Image (spheres, rainbow, N blue to C red):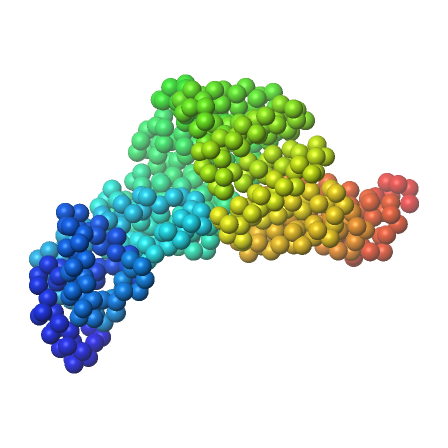
Length: 527
């Protein structure tokens, strides 16, 4: 203990006054993190105890003797010296091991209640328990059962991950992997889950080369421990395929999707919701390749399964409707897409609430449809509502908010409202650089859009470095053959051609890529 002998003696006098049940309560409190303790966590350690009896012990003895401090509505805290004192007394008790196991069970139960992608109200709700989850997965890790081992660390990581706080999430995903490997062995299925979760984080950050070996190892473990045709293996195949799709490696992704679909149909049945997910993912791949006639029947079958197995108004059905509408929009089939978007929006509002982040996504997609049709007055209020929901529910600096800002800015650009568009593009860019990293492919997209805005205004000297930086990101992160990189290259060529046509080449820099392209264009035009 760090307390002086005099302070310790004073604590001993107070300890002597406490009856045994109150001493046990103090011992339980010392097992929580040195942070504010929500009282409901303490009550959960006493499932058979009357809550009023427990409160009487707290109020009469611990608070009355100034051994515990009330710091807020339903929250209490121990002074660090008292926490150490009570911990030392706890270790002398015959029930010490059982108390540690009880606290671990309580924290695992809390972890299981936490959402993977929390909204701001949920973040506020669960923030007070995060220090105690950290205590469970570090100091108390030896008292977590094998079955419960991954839950506290995983939920901490997902709590941060869902807020796009990737730097805070990363060490907890890594901790979970280290924990499971050390206790359970390198080839345990929970190790595969930890690898998969860490890979998902890397994928979200655009760290594709870091994600791939983790996905591959998770897949290998699944195949070895569960069998090559286990449904969990199908999930691993889907995740690896999603990575390959993001990299533009379509020929690598397709056989994985097809194998995942086959496993699902064989093991779960042709109409299982997981089969619908595989169908949906394969359809997304075909859509990305422009194989619309291949994608449509898969989307339709996934939608039918969802309606039959989950119900016509299930949130997953809304997602299927949304995806089919996206396909129709890509084909220019606007009249087919609109009723699907509207139905998806209605389902999401009814099932999730009018201010849920998913509702913002539905609003955004419908607004994009209207914008593509030139229905700007219909699109703008939907974009604004989607932006407001995102800021309120996810926070002003969430990557999804950056997407909403970008889309609203694009609407204003289409209308020639450049002064309204520019600050939105700049804010979207700032958010993405901060939250995703300066070299994330999404940053390249925002750079391209801002460059296009400047180009439309004749601000060629402002546009050029943005195009070049965006191209550099795409080439380095995705490779020159990735469809997005090819689109970025095409946009830059078009930009330089416009500068030449406008007779404004003096605004261009001496950058080698610019000058090389400029020479090619001038030679091609006979200049």
